[in-house]
Structures are given as C-alpha cells and as structure tokens.
Image (cartoon, rainbow over all chains, first blue to last red; front, side, top):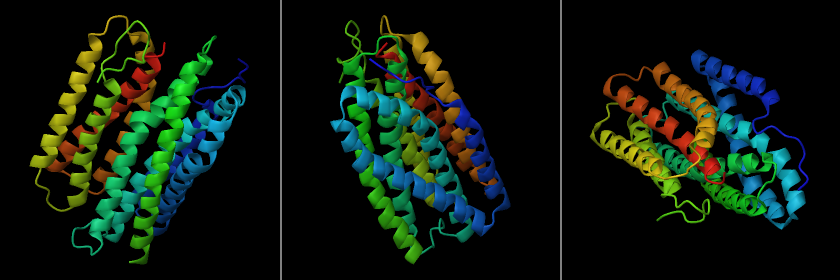
Length: 186
Length: 133
C-alpha cells in the first residue's frame, strides 16, 4: 500500500496552536467584549463549518473513493484535524463561557437561559460522540497507516466509524445554528 | 456487550461503551453546574453524577486490566500524549471558571469533573489504537 510520509501530530502546527491558546488566555484575562466575541464566533464558526463540511460533503466523497485514494487523502487531512478540532473546540467553549459571563446570558434570570442550557446539552452530546468515537478513530487510523503493513480491513472499519460520527456531529451542528441564531436575535 | 471484533485472539470488555458512559455522566454534571453558575448551585446531583462517572471509569480500567495479551505498551504510549493534550484543554476550562471567581464546593466538583474528563479521553484513544495492534 502506497502511503505519503506523514506525522500523526504535525509538529509544524504546534506553535500555531500555542499562539491561538495564548490569544485565548489573553482574551479571557482582558474580558473585553470584542476579543471574546471574536474568539467565540471565529472558533465556533470554524468548528460548525468543519463538522458540517466533513459530515455531509467530504464524508460521502471519502466513502466512495478507492482504497489508495482514501489512504492518500486520509494521511493528508487527518493529521491536521488532530490539531485543528481540539483547538477550535477549546477556544469556542472557553471564550463562549467568558462571553456569556460578560453579557450575563449564563444567569438564570436571563430570559433565554433555557436556550443557553440547550446549547450546553448539544455540545455535551457532540463531545461524547467526538471524544468517544471520532477522535479515537482518527488517531487509530493514522497509527494503523504508520505500520509497515497496515491492515486495510482495520482502516476501512475505522474510516467508516469516522465518517458516520462526523455525520452525526454535523447533524448536531444544525441544532447549534438554531440555538445561536436565536440567542443572537434575542 | 463485549467487543469481539478486536484482536482475533483477545476478547475485550466494552471499553468504548463504558468510557462514553463515564464521559457522558461527567458532562451532565458539568452541564448541570454550568446551567446554575455563577449563582448558588445545589451540589448533590453533580456529586452523584461525578461519583457514578468515576466509578464507571474505574470499573472500565479494572475490566481492561484483566485482559490477557492486551497491548498495554501501545495504549500507554498513545495515552500519555493524549493525556497531555486533554489536561491542557481541561486546564483552559478550569482557568475560565477561576477567572470568574468560581469557588468552594462548586469549584471542587468542577475540578474533579475536569480530571475525570481529562483521564477518560486518553483511555478511549489509547484503547482504540492498542486494540488493533
């Protein structure tokens, strides 16, 4: 099986992750509306769009690819996902909590507090799916591809799991759109 | 409930299912606390959920520890890097709660919940990798 050289965790991306996390720490420390809104909206939009694109556009395409094409695509895409997804999720959640504290939307007296709690629940369901199934499948498929003799059946199985769970989190992201647009509209 | 599709010679306990259950319980505890903070939170439900999550986590590890021939070395190799990453993520979440002056019992339960979260994910990742070794 032909495989391009790759790192499971691309080291070149680690300084970028470091900078993003430093911006997050600074944004939370400063506690001003604009940086918090920027961090939450940009990271949240990235999270939502990547999940939807992966689940509904790339997922079905990957599923129809030949095994060699799928392997090449996987070795180029998935290492990046190992860094991107945990980073955007962490920034979205931490900046989002600080933003809601700043705006007072996490107070139980806030008229749309139920919608805020609904967003917590959606994130919780997505977290269980992503952390329990999607992320382990991502790492496992890359580890398998690093072996001298990767097992195509294992790759097939893990990729299927990755694609299905990406679709499930994509569906959950539609609920996020509904909740966030409702909160933004008041 | 076992996971027979794993390594041919080894029958594995339902580590992924139990890990997701543990993760789910601790996330419900976190959601419960977050839904009330920064106001006063009755801690009973959160403590119950946290205890249940920790118990499921321990049972999961105990069941896995009884499996003969499991690739522990591979699991630990992957799990320790995942632990580093998820400890960092948990620390960021902890930081935002500390920044907002969360204190007392709520902070203790939140911190313990984040610890259970941060150790669960590396087990799930390490197990998924090691089972195919």
